[in-house]
Image (cartoon, rainbow, N blue to C red):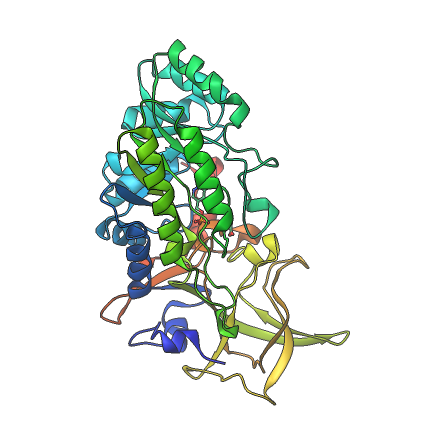
Length: 420
Ligand code: LLP
């Protein structure tokens, strides 16, 4: 078995032990080279001038990573006023921010209107609300192409079983509501779900979506959403998502649409995971080893509050074991099935169940791969634990702290009783 972090020189001039000693654990570590490479890949998905890739910042909204995305020419999509605020702080111009709203209040829509941010409405009722707030305005609508895809039912956002988007049967009413408020529908968007390794459902959705888009005469853009997968089983040889042939299929659909529509518009996509996942790992320390009813447990500081994906979706993350600065090589005779758990008081606090790993010892540092997406961004203070720090390994190979670990005082910062 290979070591991903060694082959990619993930840690540059340092190593997990040094990082763990210097910054503490749990610790998110990112690699600038890998992040930039992935950003360039999506920016070049379709080689036409009227294509833009948005980075979906719900995936990872560390300011330093947003700045890399901006430098690499990506635009961004936001899901909340908070995400808009952070994007503006990172320096994204308002024209490069797309607000994909879902069931939001008038105040939230007003915030986007005041900031001059293009907004997508997710239902007829929200379109009507937007029209009341911004009569004569320009906006987008999110359409359900009737197809969904994703790694878990919780993250499928197209098709029949989802709260998202406007169904095809409701499309005729969009024009009526828009006319009532003198709104111009200048954009349409979709997002069918998160993490597919086979692009076929996405292409089917794009074709259907563009068919629906033909009904909107004033379009300036069509946004296909994200969901492009990454190989979470890379240590056992899983291949990368085939972005090149996927891009060609989208290009065909786009060319077909443009000839039918009669003029050219801007096409967008909005991947998140593809951009950020592989450029991030999570380091944690092994503090305890235990046997219980024949099961071996490795007790770590990587609780479900730090990385929730395994307990929330049964997600798989490859793990490398580091000792004395080098990965312990997985080889016959040195493998052991172990259940890797965290320090949270829930039995579901499991990072990896019955995982074959090189025999773990106390004080080893575990390196959880592909943690750059939906890792820190979904972390919490559950059990009043401190959210981890984040470090970026720069192009020069040097580590830089890009977010400090929470402090104990942060846990009481919002309590009114303690305010003088
Ligand atoms: N656009 C919209 C409107 C979305 O809702 C999402 C993700 C994306 C783009 C980016 O999707 P991506 O390219 O990253 O798949 N927490 C889950 C994933 C939830 C995704 C939610 N929406 C996970 O950890 O797998």
